[in-house]
Image 1 (cartoon, rainbow, N blue to C red):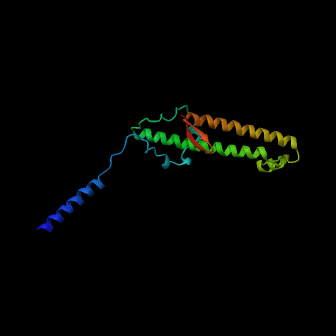
Image 2 (image 1 turned 180 degrees about the horizontal axis):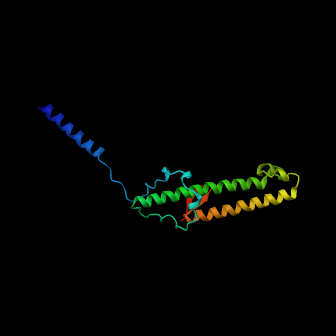
Length: 159
């Protein structure tokens, strides 16, 4: 009879332990670990939705209580990442145009028609650099409206 009590007691303890182990866990309402930023891709946002004037991400410590708020935050993060990548690409292109020769610029920009005209190439190169800087500034304003800033091709939250 002693063995029966020990076996029944151990089965009971294992059952209680299994119950607590497999019991559904409560989900937190803080939203700090449930932003969903890793589940959205940079290709899911379009540039036509930027610049709408919507204000930024909620302040640090704000509780996201609905799935819609979490989804909205995830969309803003994905859009900000996409804009940061575009800014970084344009900065890289501008930097390369600043250091290459006029002949190399003619080849890389497709202006080979003007390869023998240094004045025209210099003007085209200056215009292209100014255009890239203007586009970077516009993208920077759009990412700022989302509550982020671009840092080396990634995003940082504006405090």
